[in-house]
Length: 237
Image 1 (cartoon, helix red, strand yellow):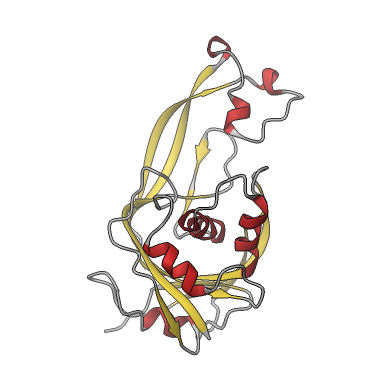
Image 2: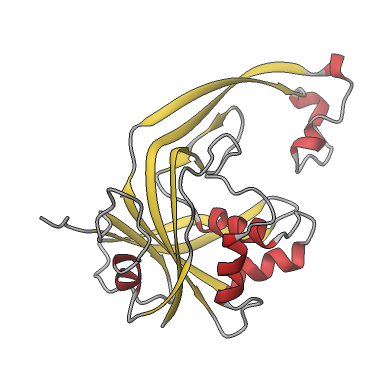
């Protein structure tokens, strides 16, 4: 099976959970929608290219190996918002919609945002037969991304090259373990592996969960559920 494998490493990352109101939590590893968004940004797709973005989300399967994930960091921001009475009855699918009032009509709230520190991941991407771009085109895009990549938030830059490469191996674990450009300090096996339905992981699943990161409509910020498999792996001596 052909895989595109690349690494993500940084001092901080934030992989958004469903966010309603003032709290923005984070997962401990990238969501599928975050990874597809990273590929779209590397390809140069803009947010209004709904059909092209949908195709990237629909035709690639993702697996993530977690090699390091440090403690959580909680950050606080002040943010401008309109009152609930102002927003009642109007469409406010985006942040721009929420702020479509005179400045004097907006209020200030305290916003709480979580980050994970000291992260190292490897990502394996598998394409189906109808994928809009071959894996080598995605590799080229990650080598010279059209838009600056980041780890979930623009304030979380990469601290090592993504170093994408193509691999032809039997399963996801082999793809991650034999990745030739690992950042210093990374072991061959991740301590945690997650993968989508339809992938061959090379290990038994420890847990299957429902994850709400399947894109339904990018413009309306709508996401549905999908099945995600998780395995916790013993570390090498």
